[in-house]
Amino acid sequence: MNLKLKIKLSKVLAIMLVWIVVAILISIYDHLTIDSYYSKGFSDSYTYLENVTLSLLGAMIASIMGAPFLVFYVDERFRDRSYGASILAVTISFIIIVSIITVIMGLIVIPSYTGKPLSDPETRSEFVKYLTNPIHFKNILVWSIVVSLTQLFLQINNKFGHGILFDIIKGKYRHPKKEKRIFMFLDLKSSTSIAEKLGDETYHELLKDFYADITNPIIYNKGEIYQYVGDEVVISWKMDDGIEDSHCLKCYFDIRARINKLNEKYTQKYGLVPDFKAGIHCGDVIAGEIGIIKRDITYSGDILNTTARIQSKCNELHTKILASNDLISLLSNQNGYNFKPLGSIELRGKERKVELSTIL
Image (tube, rainbow, N blue to C red; front, top):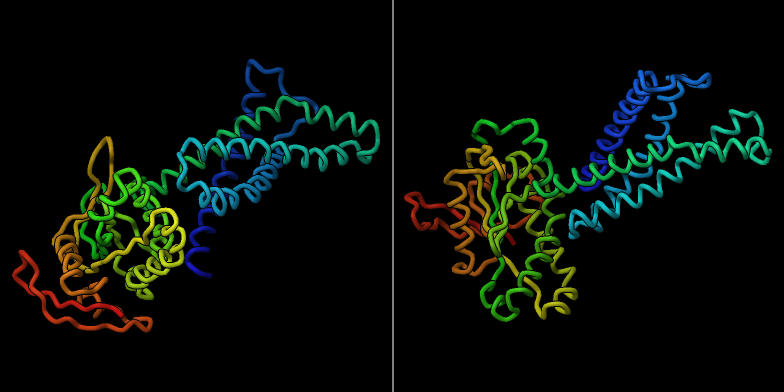
């Protein structure tokens, strides 16, 4: 199973599990409400076991239909839309889906309840009563809210970056901790001249398209988007993730393959195809949460300055990618990449020279 499919399936399973738990909680809430002082009480046909069974059955059908829809379709197609637009689209879709589920449940439950086929007048009458029962409107309202919140959570998760939101919820970086990480500074080439040629608004659209198009190659190589800084994106890996199958290098070449594949799109829309250069390095950083209103996880350490300076050497050395030999020496599986050493290079502000190589 490739990493892309594994990430999507993990999201689907998480949504299914949450929705099943929500269904159980709703059935408990219904039971307590019916048993309250303000209720008429339980009818002769009511049992909690039947109520929770129907709730679970409905949740399982909804999650089987809905979770893949959210992850495989909405999360891809509405990625560049506003939060409000995606939530509204999902809510409307799920009102339709829950309505369909209600009809399906009626077709299963009512004939078994009457003991007669749907063609029988009594069964049809009970089926109509079932469909017009106010509890179904309550279910549509409640589950529309649940689904809307699920979509909002997915959007927030995307905003922070894959896996980062859970680290914040768990408080993993509440106190600063030292980590070994890999960083890639990826910068658009000739950005100043491109901005002058296109104008500010069109240039912004170019950046927006470029960052959107390189997102999947980053995520599916276990990378985390740390920062967007103007025309530069900073990508980070946990050391083991970046070294595994040379994800930190493969990410760069997957991004280049993705942009090359979209050559026609960029040419027609902007009259050019964005090119870029990258510097990659590894080392120790201090990771920790900062901020109250806009809480985020930040990294600090000499490795970031060094990586930025490595990337700045690309133009001088006439190459589009530079990696430190410190990083390359850690890659046990180099996936057929060829490395061309460029010797020891003194970086501005550094006492120790850093040995660099380009990747062919």
